[in-house]
Image (cartoon, rainbow, N blue to C red):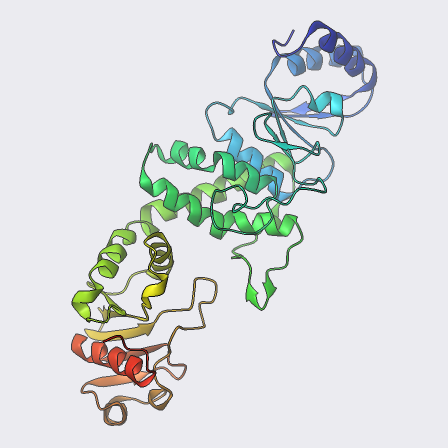
Length: 366
């Protein structure tokens, strides 16, 4: 008898299962349906009542509960839990964790449904992060267990980079699952959430789906940890020392050439409360030809093509001698027709281009 059941519960549900349910199973998943032969029942009955269980609904399944179950089973404490798929309340009452079914969200009771009429939680309302997309079961489980999953998969404990990865993974991977499951459109003016490869569109067979989520999540986590994250310290250093580049503090320099800086910049800007500092341009060396670039910083991470201050209209589309003459700055090479980026032969040249652009717009801080 399961240690979680009273004798009356055990006899009641066992009798119900023997007489009313067909408990089919495959490795890791039980699905409870209709009557079956006693010989099959005996085996299923023993296994069903003695194992720890994660419950979710049967029938058609979706990306949110598949991802939620993947997260739970990535943790050592839940790795050996069987997945039970049913909508029957008596069956679900025997599950240690219930996901995406049951009409209740209660972290203490380990119940994580989001379909109830009064459910309106977001990462923000839970006090986790400043995201405002309504959560699905994926977001609920990620909110409560995501950091532990990242820690377990990377073998890290109490490391500050877990917080950075936790936020980045929600933004680039989990938030779109929440939004799609809740029927939230990505666009109404500016995009509400980042939409990558739409994992939601590739979910089909349940256990294959969990393996797909496992593969994609681990690939993303490995990339962020091994490739994306190492640039973070360089960006922090560049932003911290921006007043060494120009007294306005509105220009920062990436020494050693270009690198993936935008994602880090916006996170750092928020983390260090720099949004009111009016940081407008980044400069860096083009290692291919030893020229320098000045690039306008986008308004935010969700509006990558709308810049805080494009380079002046009069410079756009011009090159070399003509641009140098119009800008009255030595060594100019080009300015893109949209004004988002320009080039100069020297570091001092791109600094002057940034300064003059700010001055012409009346935004330079003396």
